[in-house]
Length: 303
Image (cartoon, rainbow, N blue to C red; front, side):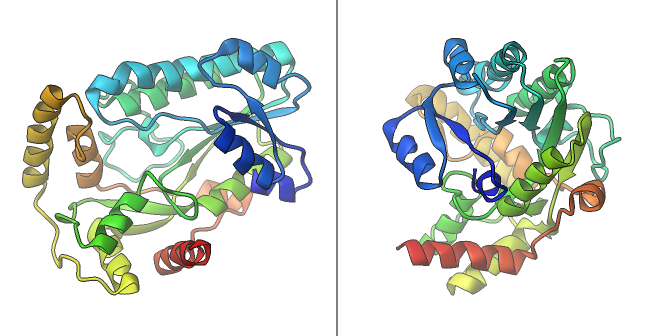
């Protein structure tokens, strides 16, 4: 929303509650009540709109939440695509994920690497793959974005949980995997540029600095002046813990703090080649220390 407003665009944004109305309006957007799972609300919201930026997703990793996740990630995308066709939308900008390729791909991800998300045992990967397929088959002018691990201002529920655990001194261990840590602001800039440059029919991997989770946690600890583990926890222990917590969650009916799916993500070694986006969209990776430092400075300013 910020990048679109900076480019001079008028932005209408879906909102499901009054609190979100205020946040959207404060950034210069027009809130409109709607939900990707409510087809009628989408038809109203898209009236007179030129382009759609679809960024909604359910990032659940707990199996009892899989049906709702599929309903949102796949059914919601199909609802939005149908409403976009009816409204004569001229650009459909779809935020997918590296998860569409699946953790089962062990090579460096490039846009020509075959995706395996469709046959993954992890529902999130399946739904991101299926949503992409729906976009590609829609007949609309589309551009697909596949970000990796996103860090930056505004994150309260995803990777920021690791940062909060370090800050509180309650981090139980460090996952043995690695990732490509992307700056949410650079991702947004790349999406707006892709729309402005009309790169229709293209997909773009949006990665970032390659680092192990141990390197990430070490840097967080250094900046927060907190003690952190000096070695990664073996994957077999993390997976065993996740499995035991999953079975316990079926009795409590409450999502655990780690699931077998989440364990797989954090034990996986992800490598992403963003050179296509760098060439065509001027996409840039933010060095990890600067990315973390920027995030915490903004947090301190808000407090």
